[in-house]
Image 1 (cartoon, rainbow, N blue to C red):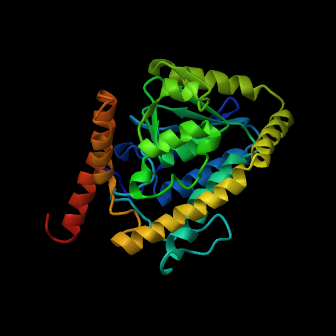
Image 2 (tube, rainbow, N blue to C red):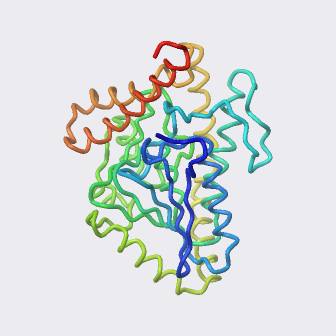
Length: 317
């Protein structure tokens, strides 16, 4: 069980490589605001440390990240934090302004800043990389995945056109991106590699060695050469329309939130962690076997704990 003073992000640096570890393993690294701001602090720490040449992002436990926190006891969407941008506090704002201001800060804004970290970043992905987990992997320059990793953005089931950092049509061929979103199905690591989303796929037992071997090789390169190369390639993506496409998709994303609230009374279209897992099982017919049961069981456990906490708070437990 997560405790209030638990470090939700761990940091260490050695041999020119900083490791940033998401540390909510009991909730499969579901991202609440506490974790997001802790990630931002860790990335800033790595950027400020001249001995660090490369940053590795990983997740503790069985999965890289189950996505944004929509159902754990640590969900903190209504809590104020010291903000990293100039966006004002979202708390107590009416209507669509609440989520629009929050997600400009913690999702779109932070992801864009992390993409621009002037040091190479590598996502080390194992197990589930779902929805908001994709955002964290996609802001990294390179992705090394284990052969048991899988990827999905099922939020179209909520009536929402993909996650806030809308890089789908840049990580995948547009036609494959449409399939990925329309069906909401899990893409296994091999297909993600074939589609160009991943740099390497290795056996689970070799994931750490393969990732750090790559990081140490990159760390030997001249720092300025790495910075300029990263800026050049990011600039090419932006000339191809990546930034402006994201701005448009973010606006449509928030139209969907507002529409959901008008129609269902809920910004997420009535979905929580449990109902999203059930919907995905129904949509896919549990076709992925063990991987489905592991991931969905994890989400169900999050929902069970969340409901128990809510019941206890209301004196029903």
